[in-house]
Image 1 (cartoon, rainbow, N blue to C red):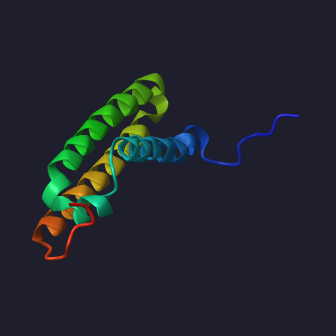
Image 2: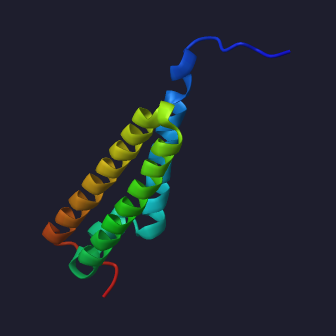
Image 3: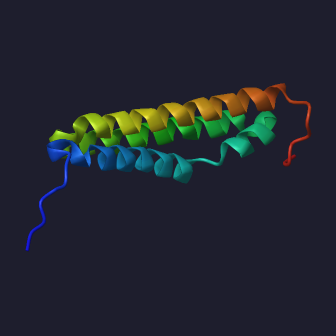
Length: 111
């Protein structure tokens, strides 16, 4: 026996779509990069390379999120919102890590 949705109608999948979109951005950037912690700890020698891969990850993520939004037009807004929020927050995290690491007097973990 089919069960009718409790509430939400057409918008009931928007939260899931937003989370999936945000999750893919985080996964792709994590796959392409080291962590913000590594960026901060070793900023002197690796920040520029790590930031290059943040940009690559954001670009790759944008392609996937855009394709998902095109394929699932009813959920395009939350897909794009989730992807944009995740990409923006990861960029800010890595940018802060780079700046904090370059300003730090602490020794790096790599030589």
